[in-house]
Length: 476
Image (cartoon, rainbow, N blue to C red):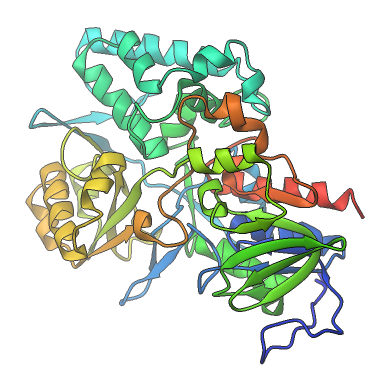
């Protein structure tokens, strides 16, 4: 595929007075911005991507290991119904392999370790009363999610009532046993990196409904499951290759790094997009970033008040990742799959993050919501101590054989400030939801939060870019 090139004055990093404007300026070089650029380039349109970081990919990031191999510090998994992510991987020559899921999972509850085989419901061993409550809760929740209008959740039946309460209030009213509540609260933290009292019930129902396969709405199982679900597979070489290979195809001359945009001005039919590194003029602008980060940009004329309210009221989840590196994945020899659920410690959920060839072992743990916020002020070495304690409580003394612990605190990243997604507290969707995707003049909004399916995932980011490109191309 041949992509149009934009003639830039490399030494100055700005357009010359004689240089025609580009068709589209894209703010953000994550998967949503790059996916937008890909479709625009295929249609023969010129573009410039302005990325604040010194790399592309956003919250997709590989970490090279000293002895070879990589680990993913950001988005890591792809599921079988995440068609756009899989299609992009295939187009870029990337192959997938299954997430390790052989053996028993680990459950730490009230100081006691137990192991259990995976089952269709992905439910740890708890008492009959808790199992019954969980089954009823999951069934009822999935049924409610199936009735949500994925494209416009604020138009769903009983939307105002569902958006007026927190998910935590609903959980409290529906579940009385401590074990069942702990499992649901842990699942929500693993999905959104929030506590249950933070998002509205409607937001979580919408988020769940969008995890379907195109023929049916999504379910909680789709979000938390491994084989056949959201954590089904991984990409050889790491997911960051999706961004770096796509950026290479788009042409590095079209992508400006270390160029955080601070101003967008509309005058005489064109937008001027300014950063400290580059200034771009364009007929259309794409804001391919989360709503709270987009609020840092000064727009003239101002964006509608509702859009500003949306940005102010839609915070990021709090998330970090910790990956313990070992010479080999020794837990497999003990019949364990590396997946764990805990009611204590800084890490409550883990996965086997070892590479396909098992050249080293890796246990990945999510640090989420309140647990992440408690660690934000600590040094990385202090965080590593607590991570090691959590993993030891789950997997025993062999954790001492680790050779390194990789830490990524997305809360402390200047151009992320959390993840995996900006979420909607009570009242957000019904009052300001329409502003998520609605263009303002020729300013368009991408980002995984705007996706009609798999919001919060790489697939959602890619689909949001494709949707935005299609909006723009209608004007040419």
